[in-house]
Structure formats: structure tokens, C-alpha cells
Image (cartoon, rainbow, N blue to C red; front, side):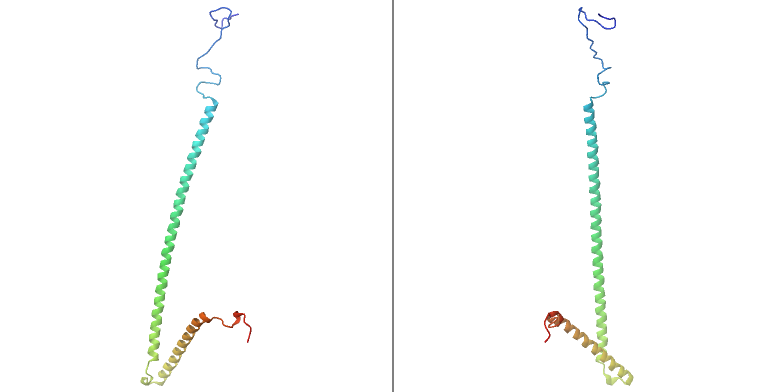
Length: 169
């Protein structure tokens, strides 16, 4: 039986169905909401995009850090090379200075060695020059013996010595 609230169809005895096509009331809520699966997919895509952007930013930061470290390493190597060259120059200067001192000493010693003692009138000075000559000659002989020992030692080393594992004679 038809009630006053429900619309009836024009034919009698058939129930009437109400179809509401208005956008006010849908089964899942309001029409401005998307279906749940589409919203989740959009949120997932947004999170994935944010993660990719974060990864890209981190990669860029790592590249920048690597560039800074490589530049620092290059700078350190250059500073090391410059310092080593400066030290080598100082070493060469020191060697040259030592050679000049050795040459000057040799020249002074030669003056003493070739001095004519007969021209020296004072006996104390003459005696001092003789003693200085003896010291110079002894020093030169010891230096020569040391050089000879080093030269022959390289060739003949410890022949029959303690390191040879040879028995005593």
C-alpha cells in the first residue's frame, strides 16, 4: 500500500523504486572523496617521490663531499710535494755549504803543510806548526784508511769471520 511519503509509479500494483542520482548522498561518503584504493596509490606515489627526491639529494651531497675530499687530498699532496722540494733544496744547500767548509779547511791545512819552516824565526811557532802538520797528516791517513776499508769491505765483507760459519783454523 502506498504511503504518502513514497512516490508511486503510474501503474498500479507495481512497487516503485527510488533512484537518487543527486550528488548529496553516496554509499562511501561525499562525492569529493576518491575511492580508497586510488587515494592510497596517490599517497604511495607521493611517498615514493619524496624518497626518490631524498635519495637524489643525498647522492648530490655525497658527490659534493667526495669532490671536497678529493680536492683536499689533492691540496695535501701538492703541499707535501712542495715541502719535499723545499727540504731537498735545503739539503742540497747544506751539502754545498759543507763542501765549501771542507774545501776551505783543506786549503788552510795545505797552507800549513806546505809552509816553509825555515822561514819561521820563533821556535815555539815552528814547533806548533810541526804539531799541527802531524795532526793533519794523521787525520788524512785515518780518513784514507776508512775509505779503503769501506771499499774493500763491500767486496770482501766478513771473510772467515764470525758470520761465515767457518770453523777456526
